[in-house]
Amino acid sequence: MIKPTTVLGQPAMWLRAPDGAEATVMLHGGQLVSWIPAGDQERLYLSPLAMAGDGEAVRGGIPVVFPQFALLGPLPRHGLVRDRAWQWVEGATRGDVVIGVLRLTDDAATRALWPHAFEAELSLSLSGLQLDVELAITNTGDSPFTFTAALHSYLLIDDLKHARLAGLYGVRYLDKLSGKTQPQELDPLGFAGEIDRVYYDVHAINPGPLGLATAMGRMTIQNVGFDDAVVWNPGPVRSAEIDDLPDHDWQRFLCVEAAAIGTPVTLAAGQEWVARQGFTV
Image (tube, rainbow, N blue to C red; front, side, top):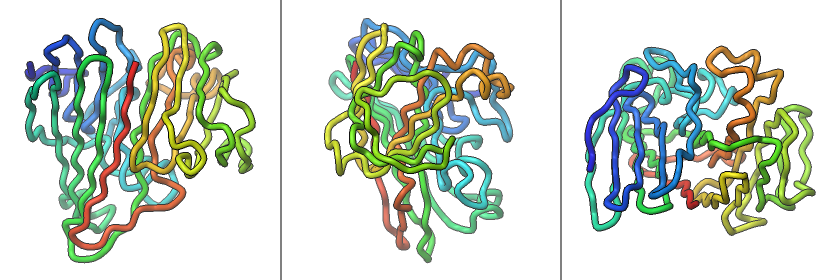
């Protein structure tokens, strides 16, 4: 079942698989903001103070980051697509799986900031206890371009201090708080507050999925086509400085992001790049 709905006053699509798994994706930002596996509970965090509209990025869910991660370039933070209206392309139920596809193409406003022609397509599929989110970027212009990208996934948890993330042992990371680069020495990784790390070439060390354990249960996170991973939480001090995040809600989520950062992607005219992040509970 697929039907239109609204989230934060913006158009959205609600999808339900035959087994009861549900997801909601906003056209604003092409942003998935809810995922409830079959017979389970909400698994994505959406800030109760989240806002949506022109120039507003929604705090929570799975924001799409393209063509620039964070402030690693001249563009606005996290690029151009997370605060723009995407188009709903299609939705369908195929067997036990429900799918949805959204698309965004360049326009005069994007080209004023980033002078390239592109098509971004976000596809989601869900059934049972699994969700897959795929991002495809196509160079529709006549000259090459280079970009970084991420799926900035906010995963709902009960208490950050009790969460553990496994699968990153030995992976080299940049600690953006200290500026130091070093290998991960603990596995699983625990959390005491603010964390902001970019893990490079994760699959070169660990080709398997990451594992997130909380009191809500276990989740596996599989990135395909994304070489890197970002682990982020603002902690109590930074959280108090973020207007669209309640002061204490830093304890209720962990961002485990699929990313292409360390080695930016270059696409020749007509080429396509595809990458995916999958979750299973």
